Amino acid sequence: MKKKKSKKQPAVIQLVKIVRKANREEEIRAHGKPVRYGKIAESKKKYDRKKNKTVSDDELSYF
Image (cartoon, rainbow, N blue to C red; front, side, top):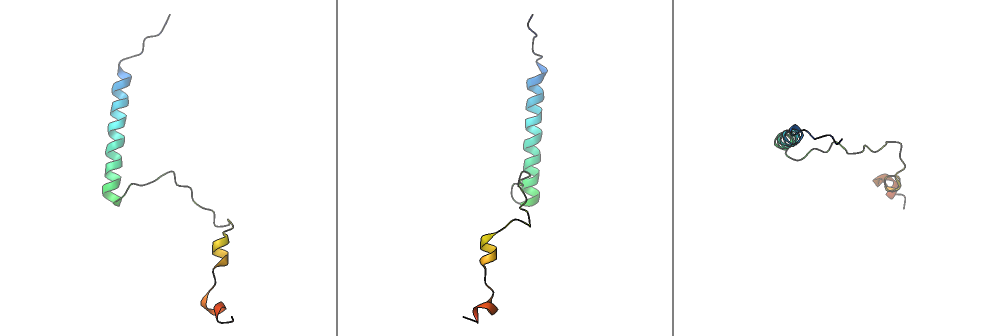
């Protein structure tokens, strides 16, 4: 026998979507832009070639 889906599920899904949208609009009002929670923090120990190539003004005076 097949189970019948309850009719409450779509109403619950719609309610969750409404709440998420309201929370997102509150964040935009509070911060002035959308907030990303999935952003990956870059490690401080990671090798960065461009950062290592930067030369300060003192080092330029030797050339």
